[in-house]
Image (cartoon, rainbow over all chains, first blue to last red; front, side, top):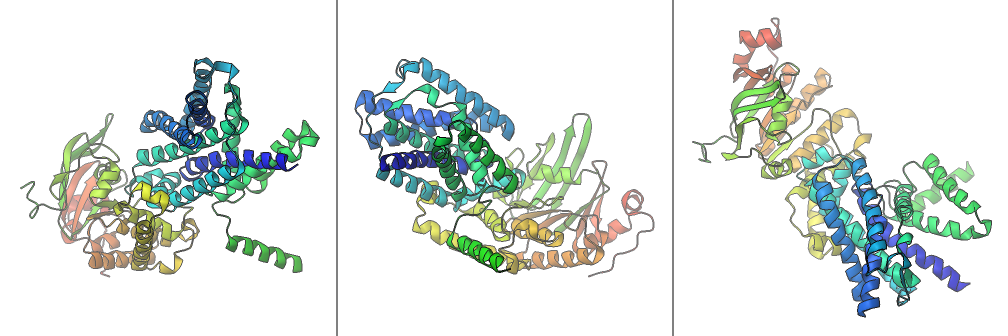
Length: 290
Length: 267
């Protein structure tokens, strides 16, 4: 039983790492991406190839996987963000990019195409995941509470006004994309070394959509919101596994309910904090008495 | 003349022309704003006043001419670089960071002069923490200068219109500019509120010794604040002079102020 529970938690944490990065990009910088699975895949393949074919140390491979994701983020972000594509056009561009990467992975010799890479060393475990998750959340929190993060928030709020505050919109957006691509790449490396097997069909646009859905449902402009949403999105389908095919309906219903009752997302622009929990408790308590 | 920093005005417009296709929004606009001066830019709607602001701040590129800030050409520079060189503006239609707190709005402006590195941001090194404390203290100072210190934690869009205007001015001040551009700060205000705002602008001007270029339709505000006035009509210069001269200029009376215009009272 513990094996199963720890498996669900591990998968949840892997997705949390990727989603926190995406939260910085979508939630705080205000750009939508439908291709983050590609950065995830690039991180997964880079790390896996390094340990599988070249016998690299796991941690070095993880870091390089993250860097590979970040580098590709830079390469795709430079032309698209420089062109000041409107945010919806940018989303389409990332959708195409995501598919292109998947097709590329299916046809390169080193990735062994659609057969995938079986027998990757299983080095990802719960402690490693907990450390990585904590590190990524800490870095993201520090970022958005610094001048670099505030510049991103200003861009999301009103990019004309942001420019008049001396913010370089292109650099702000690019920086945020590279950070989120790094996080996705790191998560990919952890994913590959957790399941010990990867193939291109794992990294479809469904995965990208799921990550973006978690950010939107969790709350744009919050880190804790998307983290909670991710854990729910991973946890509930698992808990409902007995319900078989209906769990996908439950998943969709959950999304609809969040959008109807909390259009600003679970956490809105807030973070989960002791003060907030206290105020909820007070409201609940008062409501109970009245 | 040009390049001699001592004599050069804070802002110099030199035959600035902007054409959008066949329409000439600004034609051969030439004027100076001297150090410490409050200059008014007035004219009917569509005269090209806001276009002039957009040209100065780099939102639009010039078709012809040059714009100099303290003797140095800023023509063709990116808007965010022009801000860093020392030009701040407010917007005709308020553009605050609506979902953020009043304090954060000002903090983002102050960030413009911060230099700590991205790597130290990620690790939140002690130096970053020190700078963050200093920035937040400074932000409170700028809020206090427009009387918003008790609203620091309020969401920007939860404030009434008049206070949002003041916040926009505080945010522009926090950029520590050499030249402040105010685009219709009293728009949508009643006479009493607009005089209150004029008093605030005057206090700020005295406190920060700030060179200011002001677009405004409330003539009592313009006449009370501006030492010099530049009048535009159909993208061209109509007149330039002191408040007194402008009020008695027959062309200005005919095109904009109206024949029956009465001298504004002083505040």
